[in-house]
Image 1 (tube, rainbow, N blue to C red):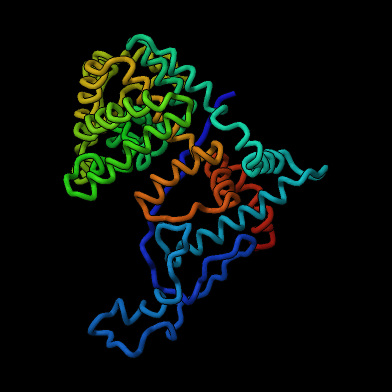
Image 2 (image 1 turned 60 degrees about the vertical axis):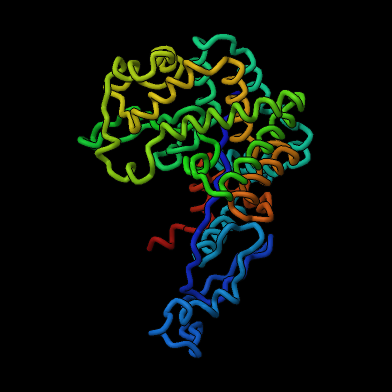
Length: 393
């Protein structure tokens, strides 16, 4: 059975101040959603002096950022209301009943499995062991295309949508995307990725804070490798090589300003042209190992990145490639593993990078995962509960 998962999103949302008090909800409560009221403005301030403070000061004072959030605004409250509604749907669907539909049983069983924290903690890293074992068998670079195809099929972040695949994926991203010149045609799209921190700037900025983050990242990478079963000395030795490889990918990646211009990304190529970018990576073997139809052309969003990937594959020893793939797999799957590795992953990515001191409750994470992994099925169960037929009339 494939181990198909989604990475945990760490999203910072700006404060929005056009509503009344919306306190962070308790675990078992639906947050109260209220509309904007003129009473929320601070009439002790002049609107022409500082309109933001005039409109938002009272709201900001009444709505501190909850400890499990990186940011807070009225849209966050609405999001949590929806997740709580999904939770209610899933809890109802997870209760064994002869009247459950096939869809309700599917989403209910998923949610119940996700909520079984004791079993998840007991399993530790065992669920990801098949991926780690496959990586450990890499002995020659010629085996890399099939291995990456295997990882891309079993760890979903590498083939997410256009936005997520910019950085979050193992080595590179692959997904379907409409032809820029003819939206009726869908092309196999290859994009820069392979960096396990949120963006290339985390690797390239030279300010003191960025340097401190990279030092903490080294310790985090070593700790994750050790938690997966590697000897501490080996894990500590491999961490700098992993950071260096990711930094090489960051240097080759297109910057965010250039990515805003579609012309820079509209690079259609034949398979032979793609192969010319990366002679050390056999694309025929990679695509042959994927259960995907052939593409008439390939949309390569960042050709220079793939040239950089070629240099990395050609120059790095196989043991460094194994270490990089091992850590990348652990990183993406950590939110779904036992508490120790989950907490280590959260400590760096949420506490260090985004300032969230507390992890969200498991029910909220499981409801979000269910919606992300099987959105259509969850949507059917949700509509049945919250949007009955009479609401259409």
